[in-house]
Figure 1 (cartoon, rainbow, N blue to C red):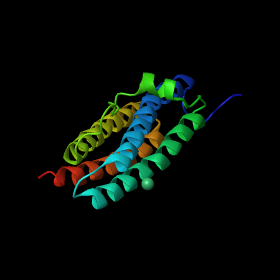
Figure 2 (figure 1 turned 90 degrees about the vertical axis):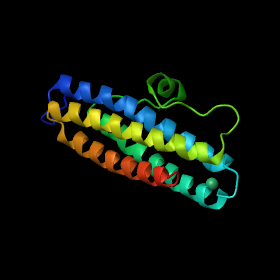
Figure 3 (figure 1 turned 60 degrees about the horizontal axis):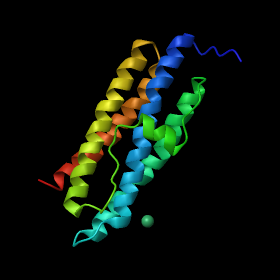
Amino acid sequence: MKIDIGLKDNSRKTVADALAPMLADSYALALKTQNFHWNVIGPEFPYLHKQFEELYGELAEAVDGLAERIRALGHVAPGSFAAFDKLKQIKESTGAPPAAKEMVGELWHDNEALVRHARKVKDLAESVGDVETGDVMIERMQVHAKAAWMLRAQLE
Ligand SMILES: [Fe+2]
């Protein structure tokens, strides 16, 4: 069906293609953060178990908004581990769980990576007039920058 939301067809496609890796990275970070919620040990357990839960909970809701923005642009949202694996850049945590401090450090860097990733998508979206996606990306940048700050502060 014909879609006319004031953006060129190729602009909608360009932005949807840029949102797919952002969705995959967000999903990958949600999974990693939940993994750490499950497997963290040590004296900081009560705090970190709860903090990681809050972080993955926010991400689990955010991925829905990213996928639905791709749909609103008229494109198919990736929704399989196979597709996410091809699209993501966030490194998975496989093997034995790292120490609590390493978990915090890894999530700090991953959240910073997502701020940078969202910033690129925002610039691209706005360059073709898609300020709505730009708006979504600004929110993601704020959320991930705050998470990165809080995680970083725990290591200072
Ligand atoms: Fe839980």
